[in-house]
Image 1 (spheres, rainbow, N blue to C red):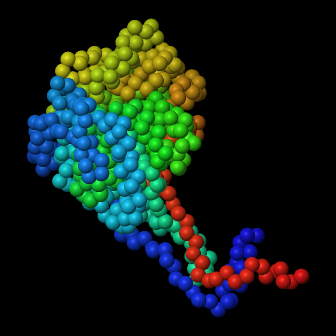
Image 2: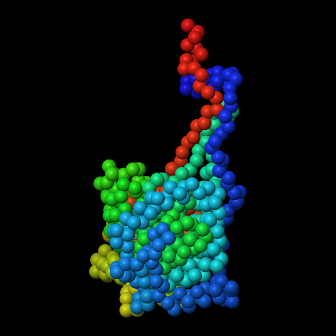
Length: 569
Ligand code: NAD
């Protein structure tokens, strides 16, 4: 009905001889570029990348970098001095930094609110070019430095750093720019553009976005802070204390690439001081968070309490923890199960949100799977991440060490649990915990259901004739739904698992390990307590930070208020 009215009204208007106005809404000039994932370099002996990495490691290890708070174009230091240490050699400090107090956080808010108004006016093409320049700097001149800071500061091995602080970080910058460019191709319907033109333009949100990032992925810090900025927001970035140096490098690279001062403000701070101050501001436009469930719950609760004070309804994105599973069917290929599980559970000490932390294995396959896991685990070198044959290194800090050791101590004491392999912990030099395999008779023991975020794999061995009951446990025994993998050769089972386990994981793998998502290939995120599932690395993520405006322009005057049928009485 409405559309008939609109058409006849438009037709009536079009019949009039009128002064035609032209559109005043400028068309966004979008550069035309394609996109592909950044290649992961191999670091073979004698390669250029290996030589460059070694030089960068030496330079980074040789000093303790002084990292200021940056608000707008000004640097600040406070009396609250902190240090980032190497997790695998905790006497060695690699960054000295300063906690912003509530006053400085407030100063950053004030600055961001003003900067946003100017930044939002910068043409999209110019912003896309800055992001491409940043990606080029990360891929070239700064690649080795980013990887060295990640290896030494977060104890990642060469390959783990390369897939994070090089490939994934670069992909976030390039692909989010690509997705934003693609989004501009959509324009609303204009039925008769000579009469009425409809258009859509993307704005940032007036106010500021708080980006609160975790320690475990350098790339996540870059994405949380810079993707909202890309679409026109101004950001306060609170990096993690234990990823400070690598995050600082991203900030500096982006400034060099042309991100103007104040678009992203670098604000290390005590978590609660930062959280309390941003949630109390009426200008809070959104929180882009990745980290643990308790922190996100606290932030959400504070936003709820302050909801009547805000200018906008703050957008809340939170990607949180997981209790990711490998579900093994009796028809599974044992080699894939064993290799995939060792990598997923123990690479980067299981400190990936997607790491496999629980496994369901049928009795018929357990002897072979156990033998494979135990013998392969025994070959893993745990040590200095800069040595090329190291498989994994230390966990991030003393808090993590105590938490993970607590679960292992529980396993050693419980009658339901048996430590099948590993279990030794030593924090004398670094926070080292052996990759540990625990067999649980109780599928609901806390070791099977809580996030440990460390190198502990818990296995429940199920009778082959209890497949259905065991599948039910996957979704019903934990609060998380981040990643999960099924291993089977039986196609009928796989089809069934695809449907029945649909709600148990935001990223679901078939005959592949539960880790290793790639930007643009497996957009990432989970539901339930694992987060808001906004799919970082997918096409919609950048748009979540946009504040689109629909504009209707009419080029002919409105000459009457009656509709044609009204004269036909
Ligand atoms: P964390 O929650 O301890 O810290 C995350 C960030 O929040 C840090 O910068 C911290 O300083 C800050 N923070 C702490 N208290 C705060 C407060 N009251 N207000 C504001 N900020 C506060 O998490 P973490 O140990 O750094 O990271 C590990 C967690 O992150 C794990 O649970 C892991 O599963 C999760 N994670 C999830 C994803 C995902 O995509 N789903 C990705 C990476 C990590």
